[in-house]
Every structure is written in structure tokens, then in C-alpha cells.
Image (cartoon, rainbow, N blue to C red; front, side):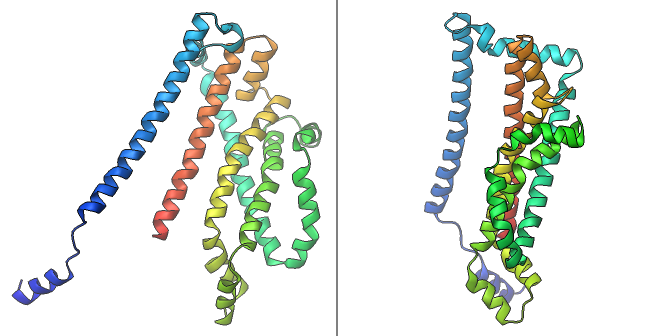
Length: 279
């Protein structure tokens, strides 16, 4: 390499990160670590207090169960070969309802944004459907569709769909109109406005809708399984309550919490990927 090339490389060399920036990154990393440690300590302390109170009969372990009995119940379900069957059925129904609710809700929101006339017609119906207690429609879905996973998925859609439509549509309408006018000024079509402005700018709103749908999907699935199911975590909760096996009920609730947390973390991971790609 010639001296001139070396001089050019020296001139364009990226400066080293300052010590202040390194200290800042170190503090951010330590803060994240401490957050995780404290979260783990709170969970461990809560489980330990639960176990101690149950052993000391401060609370009745028959009613509240306790971590050791929950662990025994999980092992028993695994040995009987039904643990992953019940978890798999509920998770599949939740994921299908979650994906369908998000996709259909986003598509409907796009259609309503596309046609202002259609949006104005649909507005009162969306408000009414959003305020309607969807759980009351469960028996109707069972009669219409039949007792099975399809009715449970429709129940999930009924709970999450309208919320997704309203959330995404409000995100579309909140976009800066100057950006849209700028694209239109340069001859951009409505499709280009949608793909180049609305959808990229509304990605935080869509991610927020995904996070909301995580909880709504699990609510819909469990309500559906309460009404009609022969397997799944909701079925175990109902069965355990009927025969007073509250260890089974608490075990199912704990597994539901873990599954919902994992799905939520999946959405958070997707959000990080989208943010990284934008950068």
C-alpha cells in the first residue's frame, strides 16, 4: 500500500469512541442487568413466601396450592403424557387467533382509511361492536359453528379484531398530513402513500396493537375453552374447579402466564428487529 493510500485511510478513519460514551454504554448495560436480577429476585421471593405461608398454614394450600404441589402436578401431567397435548392445543388456538386478528384487523383498517366514505359509515358500528361484551356471544358462536377449535378461534377474533381495527386506523389518521401531501405533490398514488408513508410511520402503532392482542388472544381462547373444549389449559381449569383439584387449576394458570409472557417477548423481539432495520 502506498503512502498516499495510507494517508487517505488515516484521514477517513473513524474516531475512537470517547471514554464518556463507553461509560454511558456500561451504565446502560449494568442497568439492564440489575433490572433482570431484581425481577428474578422478586419472583423468587414471591414463590418462596407462597411456599412458606402454605407450609405454615398461614394460607390454606388446598385453596391456594403452593409451588411444590404445582411442580408435582406438572410432573404428573408429563408422566401421563397429556401436559404438552393440553399446552399445544391452547397455544395453537391462541397463535392462530392472534395472527388472524392482527392481519384481518390491519387489512380492515387499511380499507377504512382508503375509503373515507366507508370509514364514516362504519364508525358507529365499530363503536357499538367494541363496547359489546363479546363473551356473551360465545353460546351463539357454538350454535353457529359447532363445538370445536373453530368456535374458540372465532371467539378470539371477536375479542381482538375490533380493537385492532380501531388501534391501527387511529394510527393511520394520526400520521402527519404534510408528509402525505408531499408524496401526492410529486405524483404519488394512494397505494404509494400507503406503502411509503402510512405503513412505515404506523409500525409503532401496529406493534402496540400486537402487544394488546397478545392478552386479548389468550382471553378469547380461555373463554372459548371454558364454554366448549375437551382439551387445553382452559379445559383443565374448568375440570380442576369442578372436582376441587385446585392444584391443577393453579398449575394451568401458571403455565398460561408463562406462555403469554413468551408470546409477548416474541412481539418485543419483532419490534427490536424492525427498529434495527430502520436504523
